[in-house]
Image 1 (tube, rainbow, N blue to C red):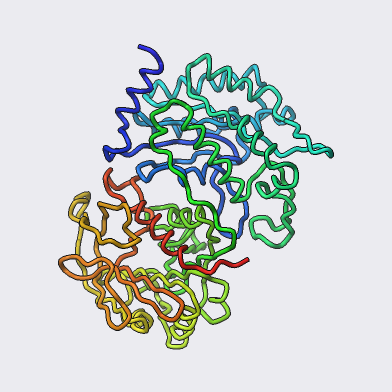
Image 2 (tube, rainbow, N blue to C red):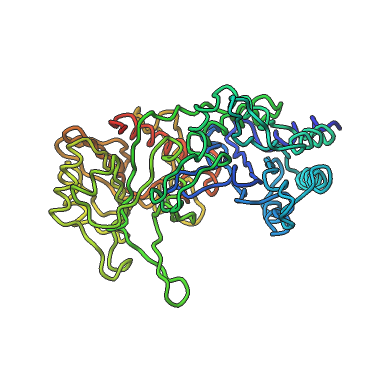
Length: 496
């Protein structure tokens, strides 16, 4: 049986773009590929932008880590951890080289034609032994131009070794080294600077307090550009995975900021004996109850992610274009919960009328505060009823399935949605239902002045049910989340 046929059979097991199967992609690599913090940080890895170019049926698990080489990735147990999660038909993208060449660092150095080659061959064989599909990627180039504007490559033999191993083993190859070099040469010395962390001033970003001048790591714009090169490489690789590649909308020219409330929702959990940290619907929480996946969708659409940890005022809201309040605390969640006060509701209303977009995510009876939250919602003709429907038990996901979705931008291209434990919403005045189920309206919208309000009777798009990591194939919550981001972005006056 030929390697090409083996790959084809594995992909057929994983499913095709029309059969509702979930396609899983694992990433192994270094900092150029790795996920980076989204708040107060200008750096992005191209791997965290890759989902923007893939259909919602795909799920990307990014195991790439800053500073790793083929040597250290194994010695730290990261490779074995990745292998332990593989299923038949999973794809594994492997990109190393930046740190393997650091001869002075014995923990990371791997000679190009020695250990580096051996490690790549091992990676390919390990993935295949578990029924997976290895995809080798040459390292993306560093930005390096002479005074005369000629590009100079600094990767030595490492890209050639990747190409040779791919040819010898029959593994699929995405030649990011070649395509990224062509991209930089096309842009030239000056225009290519926008792709990299050049001249980041000290004190601007909490993640880089001392500033940074860097020709290796990417801005959001650069990470998106390289992710597109990777997606183009998938298309030309001959893999059936190419059927899942899509075109991401371009990043907007201006800036827009999405602020998530952590004042009314301020749940904390204790770490050890003394430390107390926020959790539950926070941007950086990658557990089921977090909003990290939603944050990534906003980020890939060009939105800057922020948090509002104090009561909203005219001054603090002025920095935001979108404000999300989710599931205000009850006394069982916070001993002394912060509740909506009239002055705060008035400031939010003024901000909406001036052009802000307000997203109100509630919860079902017993799991959110309603009276004071409604003092804000009612300013826009909306009221959360504090009841509870669609109580899905265990893994009976079909009990929360929603079909026959309305012709609304939120649900464009969406046929099957999952919602559980929702409260209904009453609409008056300018408010109008968006999604009404047999027991009542669960999503509604309103306009006030130049702004918009969307109310949802459930936290809805937290990590647990945003994509198909947990939801069975066929549910399209990620597509709905992408549509929400597009809906939000469609009516925003961008800042310059």
